[in-house]
Length: 187
Image 1 (cartoon, rainbow, N blue to C red):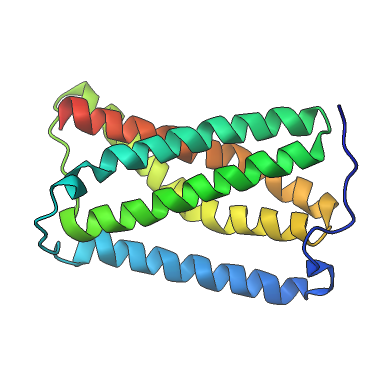
Image 2: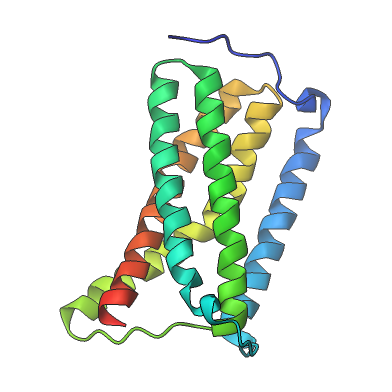
């Protein structure tokens, strides 16, 4: 069942697109710098909370949930069910945001996680990890831009940006789960 495409969802139709892109770029760069510092330069904090070590499983769960929600959202847009598509994509955004919060807490206390696998599995793991990291750098500005263009009623631009956003966001979500699985199996 198809639904009507709303003119604008949030009142952003009058917001200057150039300012929005600058804001999205600034937030994305700040997030990247913070995460690099957190994972590679900051010493882990101490905690006596035992469940913090298990947040990586929660992170994988949020990534898996994002994957499912992205696929459901994609199926709804193919049916031109715009309202249901929007709901699934917003849910995927919330799931990815919860992942990011949990990820930050985990790395604040645990630091960088080392991979113990050897041989061919090590090469496969690092290929997945490096591609995951590189594409995750691009997914934040792409997702924020896709949402901005949708909420501002600029659907033509939203479609163009989302053709890149969807596969990259999906890949990052799926490989996030794979990285967790590799670390669990070969860590």
